Length: 93
Image (cartoon, rainbow, N blue to C red; front, top):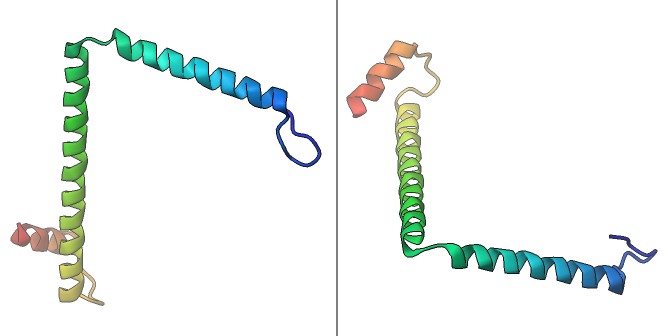
């Protein structure tokens, strides 16, 4: 795609972009028409599984942040060994 000196797109280029977008939309629509109800249900199931996994990761992250905050309150400016941190972690569980 070429730009003129003012940075605008020429009419011919814009028409080409619209044509390519239409072709892409037609291709996507055709692919969706080819899906049967079983394939659609499989996609929905996989999306639900993915959303559930993301929610679980968010919950775990929140829990770890909470535990880290508690650890910082208890042991601010204190040097701890790895085993001491693990012991504190296990007590919280």
